[in-house]
Length: 125
Image (cartoon, rainbow, N blue to C red):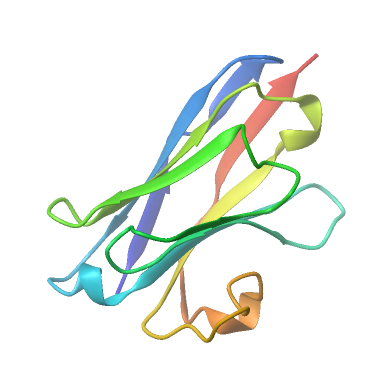
């Protein structure tokens, strides 16, 4: 599967953005989808994940209550709604996909086989 992320931009603190990740192919619903982010000079961090049908979602503690992950399998797209943005949310955001996901491993980069290019989110104070 090929992934194409979009929707990044510059926003003031407290603002909102919606990131999208479009997937190629006809088997999108076979993949667990995740979002990670990498701030300058830091390691990539898990942000959120959603299971195949969208029933189950996972979030990093730092974004819980502010970000929402969702998916539209008919459109082969996963979304990440970013609300109440903070300057520390500034990062390149990457979407990722995996066919299988073992319980408790959704935060691990090694769990995901496919990655899109990043989309940059900059939050100004």
